[in-house]
Image (cartoon, rainbow over all chains, first blue to last red; front, side, top):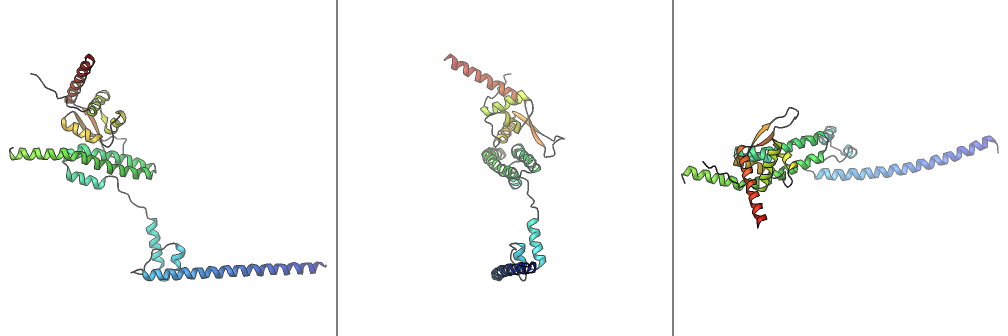
Length: 170
Length: 101
C-alpha cells in the first residue's frame, strides 16, 4: 500500500469517528433541550399558581428560564439570600418582661447580673466565631432567666402583700 | 445590751459567706467556680436574697480591660460576718453534742 492510500484510509476512519461523535452529541443535546423544555413548562405552571406571579428563584439556571421574571427580581432575590442576618444579644425580650414584673432593686440584684454575664460570654463566643456556642448561650440565658423569675415570684408577691398591709395600716 | 444574731442561713449561703471571707470580693461566676454545688442558674437568686437580708453587698464594676457590660462584684457585710460566726459556732456546738452523745 502506498503512503497516499494509507492517508486516505486514516482520513476515512477519522471522518467516521467524527460523524459518530457528532451524532452522539446531537442526541445528547436534543435530550437536554427536551428536559429543559419540560422544566420550563413545570415552572410556568408553578408561576401561574402563584398569586402575584412571583416565584422564589430556585437557582440561577432555572430563574433565567422563567419567562416573565426580570433580571432585577433575580438580583433582588439573590441579594436577600446573601444579606447578613443581625442577631440580637441574649435576653432582650425576657429583660423587658423582668423589668415590668419586678421591683427595680430585685431586677438589679437578680436579673441584670444574669443577663450581663451571658452577654459577655455571648460576645466572647461571637468574637471567637463560635456561632453554635453563641446560640446555646442565648438559649441558656432565656432558660436561666425563666427559672430565676419562677424562683423570685413567690417572695416578690409576699413583699407586695406586706407593703399593702403596711399601707392599709394592718 | 445583748445583740441577737440570726443563724437562719442555708448551707449554700454559709458557703458563699465563707468564700467571701476567704477571697474578699468576688463576682457571681467566680463563686460558681469556687463553690461546689452552686449552680449558675440560681446563683444570682441566692445572692439577691442575701443582699436583701443584708449579709452581702454588691456594686457594679466596669473594668477598663473589659469591653462589655459592667459586672456585679460582691463583698461580705458586717452583719454577714456576724451571721457566719454565729452559724459556725452553732454548728460546732451541735457537732460537739452529737460527739458527746
